[in-house]
Image (cartoon, rainbow, N blue to C red; front, side, top):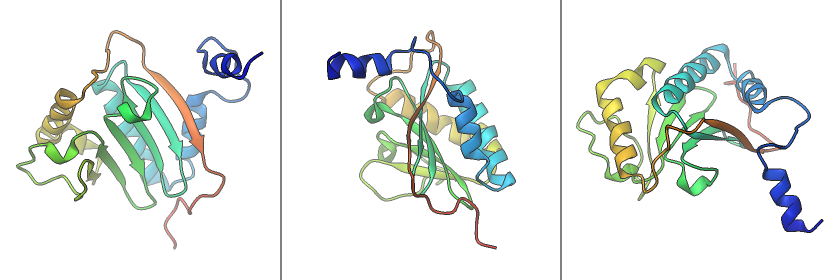
Amino acid sequence: MSLKKAAAAKRSPGRKRSGPSPEAQLYAFLEKYSPDIADQARQALRRMRARLPGAVELVYDNYNALAIGFGPSERTSEAIFSIALFPRWVSLFFLLDGARLRDPEGYLEGSGNQTRHIKLRNPGMLDDPAVFNLIAQALELAPIAIDSSQPGRLIIQSVSARQRPRRPAA
């Protein structure tokens, strides 16, 4: 089998997988965090999944943080949002054109050319009308829409062998 065919077979959604499901892997990653952060992240994920039916979720358990991106496809460059977990907080990132969002409440943090984020003081912040509006703006600006008629998918993209501690130092 050629390398191209092998790579395509590996990506095939119908391929039988051994080991834990992507959902089980994600929840194992969450368990590395303090109970408060893990619970806050679970609630944020539930809210984002309800708000973005059909989104492809891309999970990166990286050196610095656990990040779950939401976008229309498996392409990282098309991700519109991500939920990122750090030892002391959870953030919602606006990945595409975050710098262009109108934010009269001043929730957005960051100074880069593109990305902005909000530190979620509690999962209920995702229901705040101002945050809801920021999400709506980001969806409007996205070059490719999330197809809500498609089933959502969860894909574990990468797991770093070396990681910073997931819980704050005592």
